[in-house]
Length: 97
Image 1 (tube, rainbow, N blue to C red):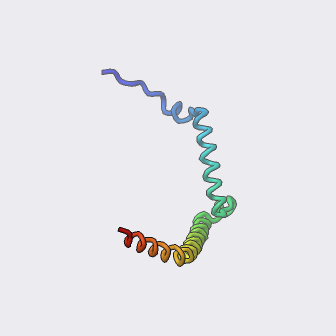
Image 2 (tube, helix red, strand yellow):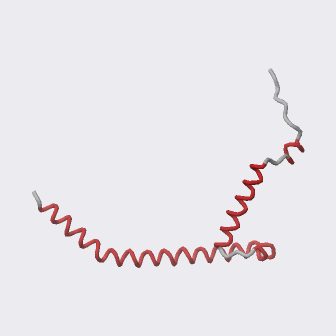
Image 3 (cartoon, rainbow, N blue to C red):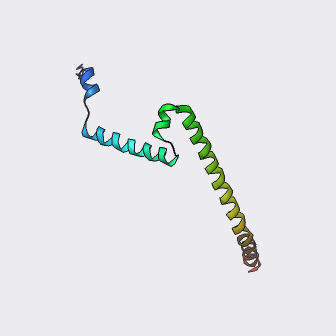
């Protein structure tokens, strides 16, 4: 049986391909955009890591809850018109032979 030759540990550790650099840049930009959407300031992450993410979680939860409240209001507003029309159309369809 032949054994595969592995490159030395340090060579594998420190060899970086151009694809690795591009992927690292893309991931950094994506994470930066998500943090910006959550209004997280990089300086506060260094000074108060857990507090920063706790505040971001609370803000995100409030935003999701507000969006759900908004969606529920417009669902009910639309349902006031759509459901009766739907029921009338179903009734007319059922009455046809």
